[in-house]
Amino acid sequence: MACPMMADCPLFPMFGTQAFLRVWQINYCEAAYQKCVRFEMASEGCHVPPTVLPNGKHLPVLQPGRKEK
Amino acid sequence: MSEWFTAWPWWVGGPVFGVLVVGYWKLVGFPIGTSGSLGRVTDVVSDRESAKAEAALEDPDALAAALRAATMEQFGADAVPAAGSTTPPPAALTSTGRPPLPWTAHLVFLLGMGVGGIVATSLRGNLQLTTSLGQSHATIFGTGISAALVLLGAGILIGFGTRMGGGCSSGHGLSGCSRLQPGSLIGTGAFFGAAVAISFLIERVL
Image 1 (cartoon, helix red, strand yellow):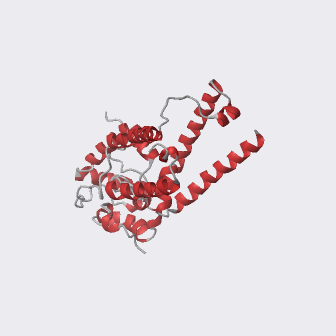
Image 2: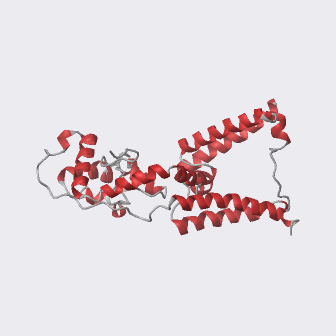
Image 3: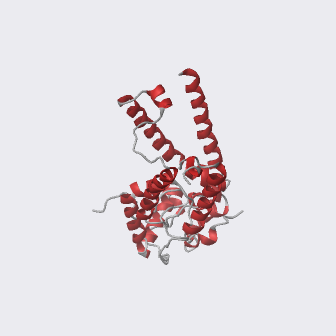
């Protein structure tokens, strides 16, 4: 069963834009959305930052807490 | 009127809490939680860093590089094509749902709790400044520095447990249980059960 929140998730369509990103959809959105941290946060009514990945890590662009040089 | 307010009856307090929980959820879009609000106030610096991170993701090239790095880290290098293979960068990411309340709104909520307590006590007609925590507390933990140390230790334990459990009695007990969240039901049963057990234990032993 696929994630019931994929329609509202900005990362889901993002993971479909490039072939290698489909691995996120396959491993989280379609196969095991229950272990997706984004799904957990949304289920609890929390704001889900767009930088949070399904594995709970932040996209390594500029992680929160990292000081700019 | 003050006679009526000698104690808040359950049939007033319960519905008021119910309206508060549902009303907050509907108006704000997030479950009510005291520790969560306190966390938003104390995390104001990291929230600003997070906002900077989100702003950085509006750059498609930076976003593509970040997704590539994250995918490689999670699924290994074999899952990602070699750098330089040209694929169109993804569009910028944006948040979904309602934006979170600013930290100042949470601060107002916390201050409102204090003001509400003062108003409620004033309506009962016994508003006064006191340092006493009651005879039972004094009997068990003493007074002065020893009582202060006990409170300090208790406060640290509560803060640690609240962070570790992702919420406190209002977040899990009111918001979580009312929405039948499994984690909140278990957590509330655990901390209230432990509190009752420890209370009985202290009463029997001391």
